[in-house]
Image (cartoon, rainbow, N blue to C red; front, side, top):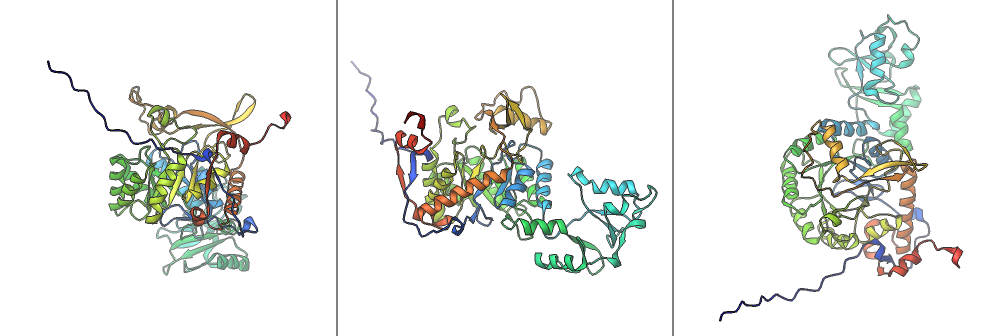
Length: 495
């Protein structure tokens, strides 16, 4: 009588232990650092994009739009604009960041000499910007400079006057014929000629640029700002992995973005690899760095680096509003994920962004010690003045909304903004993000000051003065739950 054979299985390998930030501490070392001011926080976001602080604002629609990106760059970091909007809206954000300050305005606002007072007033209120613009360059049909008009020129004038009647003519202006000028040169020229506007023209007197006093003041006041080669604020933007995202990426690069981030929850996928290769092969997009992610393993790092990634984003499920690990049962605790990815990335000279799981400034130090070049913050920056959304009152306290980009709320908002909302559009959506509220925190600058200050302290405890030296100078020690409890404030009432 035949019997059914009993199946045999290979003995499984031992399941490795993976750690996150709260599982470890950095061991204090003998340090020659005498002041936190001696510590440099300069780092790289990607292969060619350099920052002055290692902080990146997350590409979430409740964290980073134009206002946050401007504030982050002025503090020395960078913001990644979310993609949950139309291409036009995202590109408009990029242009707004790029126009927020620069040494030379490439496309100054212009007006015809025959324009009326009403038309000039509309010009000053261009794009509904807060405060509008402070001057309009008067040009003819061939863009030849004729003069300049400011709000004070028309404030008390008759409604019947034209711009040519009240403008300051070209022969009374300080005009440059070269764009080779430094910030200090511009400052001295403005002081010498008592002006706040210096137009730049070519050999045919055609307007090619403008230097403004407000921009010079911003450049002098924000000495640690992250700037491109033309002294404009740095900004990144996220794209998806669908075919339509190729044209989105092309439009973003044309608008002036400095880096593109392929935004997908599972970065070690053919979707991400195919998009990465397409962007690197496209002459309209390969002029900027391409960052790929999110990943959590060394194998993923090797594949994306081989595909041409200029930067890697690490983190599968560690975010405060992400539930991927609960829904999919997949992920790697963040510290182990960083150690594995950075071991590969550092050998290839590719910077790594630690995305998610950062709850304290100490976690930033641990991420740098694991090999990350920057950390991406979401929850810590949400609730600030610069984050999108209104301040609400909940249980008597001021709050702002935060939500995961893989949740229902963010996807509904995206469909509404792109005018694609249909009754059945989310029937197949399995959300991997949740929505909640965070306390209102005020200006983002104060948050960044605390985070960067904590990082400086962490580096001094490790005896290093540069972020790139953290992995060599740092040592981790594991701790128990009792050690974690000991690390926080104690209940002195029970002593």
